[in-house]
Length: 117
Image 1 (cartoon, one colour):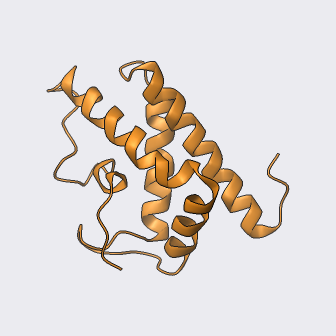
Image 2: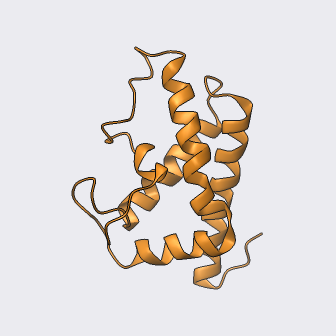
């Protein structure tokens, strides 16, 4: 499935992902905005389930044109954790990233029949 979303831009391999050391203000602002936008695909339960189930169909994708895979699901989860814990990002981006990461874990538990708590 070909699809374009801000989730693609939070992948460190994305051509739109800035060097956070060289762009110490603009870089975190850019990534933070993409995190907030991309997280909308995860935080909303129906959309999150859709993304997770699409990702489960494919282990790995090559290139920027294919979006969903378990490999990318794990990278997104790592990126949300990274942003949630890094003070370079503003508080809104950190909070949204934390919520998205928690939702991803809950969706994985839901899928395996575990209690989300």
